[in-house]
Image (cartoon, rainbow, N blue to C red; front, side, top):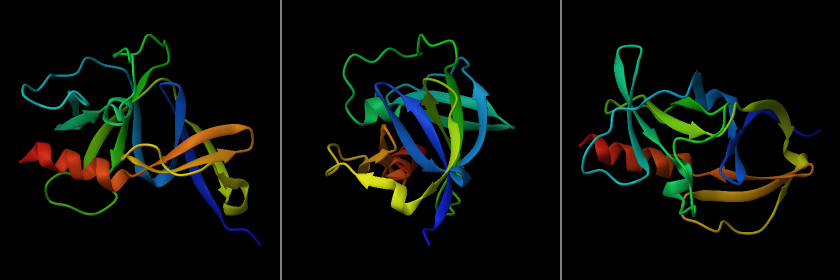
Length: 151
């Protein structure tokens, strides 16, 4: 019997990310971000959320997406507040820009078909879920880069 995990399919520029549901703390509408000078282009700025400043990341820019428009021209663009996968005193949350609201689903491990090796450093796997291709991101790598911004 295949094991199932509750996941979210997050639409991003020209593809989707597949992450466990527990990695998402909250979904908010797209808002103006406070820019932070002298940071990498993938760091879009910070978002005031529940009394803290949350750094917001563009996964696509971090993963070398060409011709990306931010903020997205999509009416359903949103920001995902992500739980950090490993406990840390540095920060507990970070934001992720999305082109639209994520879709929630349960995925059995035998439903995922690996589509070849990762093509960029922030990818763990490329997978096919039914008829849809998705990227399983290296969230620990993203979180490590966000941690470097905090110092």
